[in-house]
Length: 503
Length: 108
Image 1 (cartoon, rainbow over the protein chains, first blue to last red):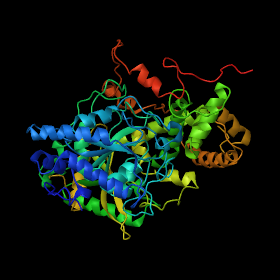
Image 2 (image 1 turned 30 degrees about the vertical axis):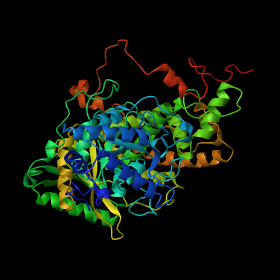
Image 3 (image 1 turned 135 degrees about the vertical axis):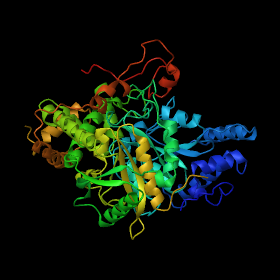
Image 4 (image 1 turned 90 degrees about the vertical axis):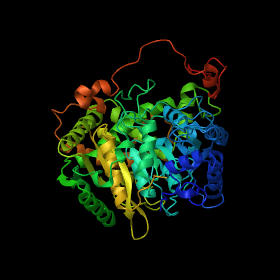
């Protein structure tokens, strides 16, 4: 359970601390940012390391940088200065974003040993807002996967059920929040990689609109799809993180110049007016065969809660939904095959030993450095782009992407937000789907359409199965309308009796 | 329309060559099996008539008049500080400090 009275009680509720709670406690002098950081590192050492439960969410710790930042925040607090929004908040960074002074692996052997000489914009913004960056988080190799089992450094365990996967590809980011190792984390989402692990681990995960958050310093997988976004224990914290991350960046030509909304302010309405009068679309295609009955029941209950809070529920149709997965796997792999051509043993990371010529060095390095799923996707993408197949696969998928996006634009003319499942099942067991790539890809059935259309989305906990596994529900919003999406998410969260974040 | 049901061993090897990947003898049949399974799933896109549908490369172009606010503007082409060359070269597997060093390029 989330505590809403954190101030002064950091040690007893460390596992469920909130952003506002930490900031208030640090500002009041009840605890120092240094102590908060040290306690989180102690918890990580006990439960994430080789002893203890070994959840394996962290790949590298950045203690020196974290403690220097904590000391800076403590000095500000001691002088009574106004503290920035994330002051003293322990945050972890998915290891596909670069952070100066820490290794960047992207979960791959091919980047082993690479120390990036700069910070990603998202990383830099978090630190400028007072966050204490604890380290780099495990993920599927190059963010390719739905279970975190594709990390070259070993899988992450789901803190809510240690025999289950945490989801992927931001599995470490979701697990670290669920386990209380971090108060919030950064993830990335290309086809569901923030929202699906958030659902599996029982935390909140935000997919911002394409262009809302800078991707400078993100190791690219599929450039027309990749997005950076936050994971947190509750909707208010996610909104606080997003307000720090969002905005134009001259270093990312795809980042938008639109003004950033007031994400935290949007949640300040009185509870009885938070979502009153909103039209909520319920897409029929997302409630068909294959949806776990316990998830269906939990989402129907969340929808009833929205109706009781004054929303109008409307059944809508997103008719091309069944084509989202095949469209995604053509476009994402085609872009990946181009993006991953930069890993060739010349500029960073691994280089194969004892190879006599340049072309053999390229092939040997890539064969040794890439894992099976990455090779599979590079081959598929190269095939889809190759002479004779381009029109049949890549062009066709781009055309269907237009149809999928039109589905959403038409729906959003009728409704203000869309509510749907985010995963067909709760967290599955380790090893359950590793043998069948098509089965694994079908995990993304409810997440990839929002990725292709560029709209925003959020996964919010909405209950548990009888076996105690978390269930998530997805709220999708119009392009750049994160405020409405967050309001609906907060109403769902409040309906679970787990609204938090007031310190 | 492409022959979706049968990527041959030769095609797997040709695509691997295009992608600069050396596959081991054990990897080839596994990749062939997986590619055919995935391409079989992708084939359902052929159910849709898309002859009049424009392709979409990224979302900015779907938002019409709003394109200029979704990343269509370019920054001024001016000289400005960049990453320190020494720091960048230090991350390379082999370098003389100014250039990347690689094995022999011309093969005989």
